[in-house]
Length: 553
Image 1 (tube, one colour):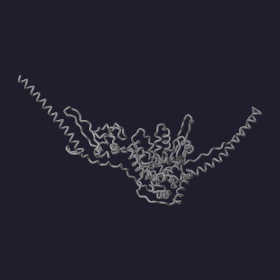
Image 2: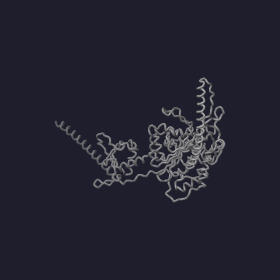
Image 3: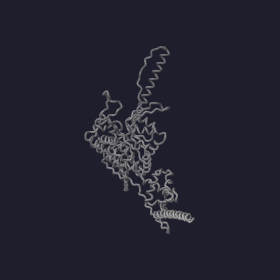
């Protein structure tokens, strides 16, 4: 009896001891959580709250870029470019890249450059240009001033076209009258003798003149294709707000228009359209487009973020803008009120007029393209090669460049952009060579200038894509903005309450966690650890976070 009583008593005592241990463990866990919370928010258990000081997140810093050196421009154009920059008080980059783009439009597809000694790889002078700058920093006026020679050439071409159309209209009127007279004679002869043998008189129908187009501002893709069909030497497209054009090409249903622009960058590919209602086999023998425009930092940054995040939808359209510049704007400004320097302007315009009137074979000593039968290939532009020194320089550069592209150290979007320098560098060398009055093979001076352009442009590309490549700090800035807007509860919340909103840059758990870690470090958020009773074998709950009231201001 006593033994049974004693055994029961000992069991009860053991159970009581176990319960006491569990209670102590729970109290210790609660105290640890409480102390951890107080340590994080710097609150004394018996005092008023004292949240940590919020350390502001660093501002988004732009990658440094080179200051533009006028020596990169063809010699005859430097004084004119400097005059525009001085009068407008704008970064020289705006003017310089637009000048190079305008030169590429004038040269177009009339001559190519072959960067290898024994290969038919050919590039043309068309280049794509994107100028980035804040509003009111003279982007558009600077670009319009640099495009002025093209507008003069277009005005002259329009006059020639109007004059030719007058002659054509008269020739066509006479042709129609002769055709009508022949038809009347035939009718009269057949009326007398239905079996009369009519002697058909052949007369040549006059050919309608084709309007030379240098620059197009606003055209549908269908109209632009017809213009390209009439101008196989190439056409320039200028858009003041470039991102609007790009977003238009992003829309559903614009796949063919987007494909047309992609083809136009190559400069040598034909394009055929078959449409019910418009006809079949509408063909441009070659589409050569030079695209130029400007945009603002915020718009291009947002667009590049979308491009870099959606790798599947990135077809390289944005990466084709080789002349992409985002220069620093000097805080210094002075009032310059002088007339444009006529002598410098006329000297520059003369370069464009010379290039527009040049015959590639006679004036540039270009080599024709022969077919398999040894005859000159119809419709194929002649070409220039590199001289020995320029070829060696290009080979050295390309060996280093290709090694960088294959290193795996570049973001895919930037890697795609830099891959297009295989076309950009030879094209810029060709432009510099011809603008400086060169004949025959492209020389070492033009190649050295083109490589210097490549080095300068690479820094600007890194700056632009740097704003588009999302970092953990970018995510933290986005979440901090949501805190300030009161988008999250003031009470403790879990990480899933961030990413379930599917906010931009915070759409999944990993992205949200990156942002939260940084905001905890900077005092915007405070982590609250909650542990379940360890004796029950449960895992600690997911950390929760509270918003520092200072972050709401």
